[in-house]
Image 1: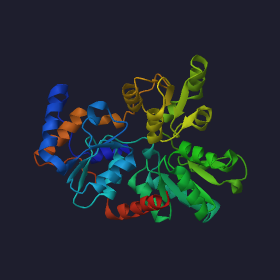
Image 2: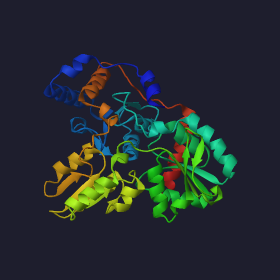
Image 3: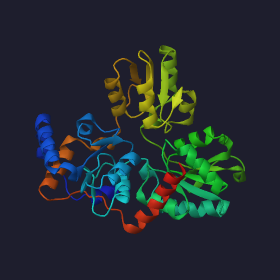
Image 4: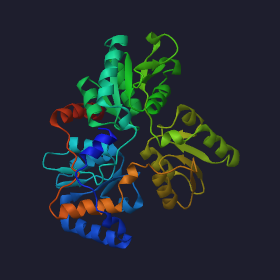
Length: 368
């Protein structure tokens, strides 16, 4: 589902009066509702959320972990997911039929997920199969819509996370000669390169022109990279790395694999959000780190580790704009509607889509 469709689906807009409430008043009201609902209410919060929201999270983590924890928490009737749309979809797929997954603001989408629509993917798959025959297995990053996960699951493929991408790409190459990696070209390229696939055996697929961006014989291609990216992580550049190296040569550079190949190549460490958090936590006192990931998380790491020097790799980086749609006023409004018996902004994935998407998720869990 793209942002336009998400907006069209939005069932209820938050009244302006919520924006006029004091922070203290909103905090008081949210706490009261949480206490009233008890275990019937579960609030997962993604690492990239604002502090004003994350303070109320019953669990924090990446998107897949939060969806899994939500599914395990069977006492919760309501899962108010503080993340973005595709994350709430995954939670709805994995939770049981008695649980309702709610997104506080339906405008909280993901630009990367929107770069691979189901219509584009179905059209592209026909061309890719006409070119390579039945030699391609599709994989999709969990940062994709339920429809894309279902597309992959129906065709024998699986989902991947930034933590298990190497294991899943290795598994995929045991199934087929080639892989199609959706929708983030950078994670796909970095993962395949680390596994020994040379760059000249990777082709970029442009869904907008329905053509390959590749010079050479396509028969040599082993990895087809969907032309998508994270709008946050693509803003970390080689120039940022060079500036840190010049000004603070003793500073470690730690980035997410959604950054470009060039940035990852020149960094000291690269890994998932969980890897980044763990690396900082385990680092010795006095160590210095330039971190290339979302700004809310970087700021949280800075506050949590005053004994270390931590900066953003890009000092002009902004937080993820769509993730930040989820704020304290929207969380309060959603909870107060729930308290009044009104379930708004519920995320519902149709059964057929959910079944095929679950196949893709299960294959990942079985092989990683």
